[in-house]
Amino acid sequence: KSHFFIQLALIGFLAPWPSQVLARWRQVRHRCLRAVDLELRRSKTIVALGVSGSGKSTLLKLLAAGTPEAAGDFFMDPSLRRPMQVIDGDAIRAAAVPNDMDLQEVKAWGVESSPRSARSMKWKARCAHALFEYPGLLLLDEVLDVMPRPLRLRFAADICFAAMNSDFAVVSATHCLAADISWLRESCQEVWILEHGELRCLCPQTQRDFEEIERYAALRCRMGSVNP
Picture: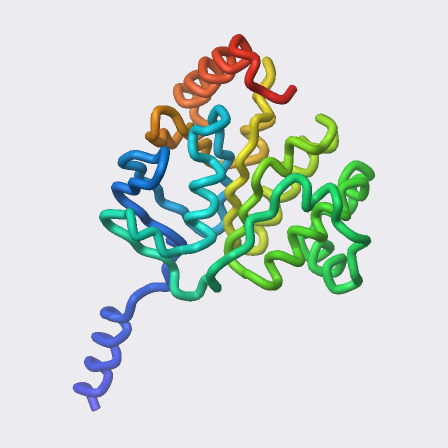
């Protein structure tokens, strides 16, 4: 009997814990990307920044495909259904009136109470529909860019809250930078800056990283390659 319980204990000790890592790639080389390393975890929201042609859309497409042969080291959670869908700004703008199932999913996120949240319900329902078909990871390409600033800030914060509540991850590529980038602290846990084929991962909640994001945003604003 004691041997039986020892065996159960060993099995429990050796059994892998449910992974919080959805994707871990090393040395990704594809088109404009050179030696990109990334790790994507459940409940995290990432905002990807970079000038046009820096590789934001390429990175989203690689995540959606889930089989980047250019990666030197590659892991993708097998529970993710692939290929996934990348939602772009035009698709969000043209989204149809949401159906009841999508609205119920959004309400389950707990973000429907604010009047501003209600205004973006159609866009959030579009995201909920994508997550219903491809659970675990939401990929947004310049979705924030098609929204007026007040609505965009509320939408971004709501999606970040929903990801933490519902255990999915979000990667949102955008050109939306302005003098005040404090909204990033409420809307994501990581900022990925794509420059010269490489990726820098910064945490906007830490002062040092936030100051680095501020310097990058100021440079982009001087270049004029941003959406206000």
